[in-house]
Image (cartoon, rainbow, N blue to C red; front, side, top):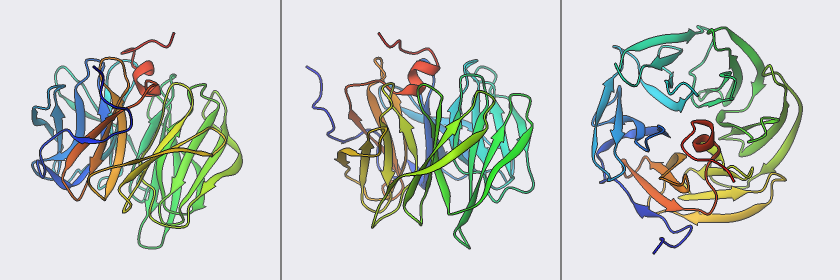
Amino acid sequence: MDKQLYRSEVFTEAHGFTGGIEGPACDAKGNLYAVNYDHEGTIGMVTPDGTSSVFVELPSGSIGNGIRFNQAGEMLVADYTNHNILKINPITREIFVHAHESNMNQPNDIAIAANGIVFASDPNWSNSTGQIWRITPDGQVDLLEGDMGTTNGIEVSPDEKTLYVNESVQRNIWAYDLSEDGQISNKRLLISFDDFGLDGMRCDAEGYLYSTRFGKGTVVKLSPQGEIVQEIQLQGTNCTNLTFGGEDGCTVYVTVADQGNVESFRVETPGRCRVLCGAVEVK
């Protein structure tokens, strides 16, 4: 019998990850990855049965945040301390610098389009500002927008016509029209909240947007029009990010900083990321 929908349970043991746990992403086989397992500067791997281990040690001085997989199965990681987007070969575990931009504050979360274009949020926490960057498959970095609030969660809609970006401190989620070559236009406010923070975001295959509410201990599910459809209560409070996994793509994994672990809950629709990596098909 399937688990009850939208009921969060503890998936990994408390404090197996540090308080810097972030950036969850699943490969095509269903293994879950998140940064800072056991100690800072690592990427941890969690098998579908919940067994955790260090997958890689990042280069000296590098600390990861957002993780995504491209259609080739390569892992992309936002290295916020060294202003890089790293690329990791999942077989050899070799680590390469895919892109470097010294003008970044600290690349935080990343989203990826089917054509391999990566979008990176780039907050400056000290002055509550932020930017959005576009990284092409050959590693070229271009600034899409500056003078924003603390940009954090970022995601592409399933039809790849919309880019969503939130601002943690200002508690706004913005939507942009997205072109095929990764340019943005027609900025509009999707929704604004009166309390608590915003962090990671992911879309399901039908276009519903999920965002973690840091400090509130919930994940909010929004319609493409910005209406609150569901709010899922977690056991931890400082939820940082989320992704989709499971055999059918309908398990949501949430990283929780105050618990140093991952929680999970079931939904009825697979994540866009599971369709993109070929793990599931939308019928």
